[in-house]
Image 1 (cartoon, rainbow, N blue to C red):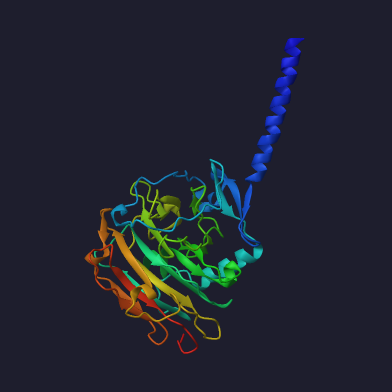
Image 2: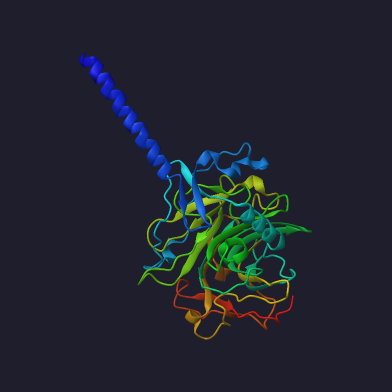
Length: 373
């Protein structure tokens, strides 16, 4: 009799536990950031990117073989972003793609997926790049973030990028912050990433298969928050670094305080020109005008002034050289890229006491209807 009671008690406890497990699983199944942005927690080994035809035999790399190379330049203050998503272990957040989101993403990726071609129709740039002492294996930079008023048929962003091109073929990866109402639904700022791979097709974030998410908390694309009181400027500090062992291209959220977060990577198999290294690295502000020829604001919407902190600015640009050694950008000849000085500006930063204290450049402008195409 006692054994029967014990068995029934065990079955009852097991049933209750199973029900609670299902309830917990359902509670963490998805996170709704707003009416249009929903993230599902997906098994890391079943994420959509692994369905890419070039990744059928890909083995997920859980973490890179390197540590972020620039801790000595971190400040004491920085944006402490409250986690809005925390998937269970073994799961990663993947944005739920609506048909509209996918269509808009493909449209903008086809229209504008690479910073290399500064002569692109309806596109304007203000930044720096280098091919000096190439090849490279990545870069990292700090970029100030600003609210902008951009119309539905315009985009404005600031990003770091790695790139190689041969004839009419280009492979590139970029990451930074973007305002793109057509893609995101409003004028919110998103941390955003893009790539142009072996087949020449561009892509944003996880709209199409390719990027492998490994962080269960930090997102590839998410509304960018305001820093709390006393937490410094609103900024993003990010990197694109190639893993020396696997060749995968990692992007990482570099934190001013606390451990850095490796968000994920673009597998080496996706590329035919940058599988081993790149010929160019850079950081730039960029816009794409509307079909009517009106260009949106760039940076913080103002031309750079003598007051560097009042201007959109970039600092702490570091480059991973041909030997996978981190170098300060002042060791390279940086080419300035400013295709239109009527609507946008680009100024060298003032030299500070140290590399950490120096602003590399200030940039930006109001845009308008006289910027040209």
